[in-house]
Length: 355
Image (cartoon, rainbow, N blue to C red; front, top):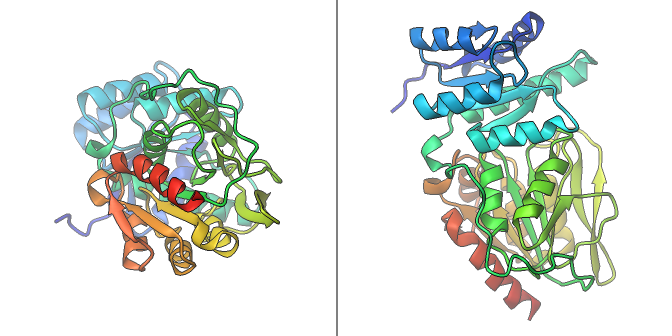
């Protein structure tokens, strides 16, 4: 059993202002303690030799050695949970996704000067990401590298215009990027429509969706307000916006909107799941994956109560068995299973409910 001491955090960033700001935000959480700060990877290596942290926050662009190179060396020599803390946007998001594939547990945007409400939300996000990473089991992560391509991956991945009565809703957080890749790359071209909330910062979800789409037989993209839910397509909620299922006659679509944090998150899994319970009812399948906290637990229970089939990722395959555990304890999970089994089950459930 782990002692009750706080998790020790090493902050690596070349900006003294950022180091000070992160130290202040992280130290506010009773379960987190800033062990040390470092101005670059060489300084960080010295600090790690003196004392091994439980988790590291790591910038990408730094002098003498970039964060990605340091991350790869760290994972090869002494794996420690790492949260990438960066201000990169646009083309830089590809670099951050590469960091995830190199072994980083999560990504969070650097805190910036703003309103009091904005800083409070930044503190919540940073604390949650660092705490989740500190509790991550690195042995549960897949080896980095290209995802498998299912048989027939060369076929057209254009989403079918025909709608279906089956909706799959998936929620994930820490460790979810790899878990989603495991599921989505195992789906055939004309799978039921899929709606996804992955806790990820603004600007990153579009690049994440594009990378997944290149690896899958289905189309994966960031959701836009008013998008239709179609077979052969997965829509990922944009970072910093909620996504909800809507229905017009026999057709399903999504609403993407701003709003307050729900269950400490925006986008929130609870927001998506509750809307699916309301508009799809028994014609839905809900899946809760790896992640810190309890976002999605209440919504999954509502889906189950509305007649949906619900699935929770099991502890053995979770990087952080938090969201799945909370959903199970809250009575929202019908079946709990290993991540490797979920894609096949989704295909079969989709066939049954469409029939």
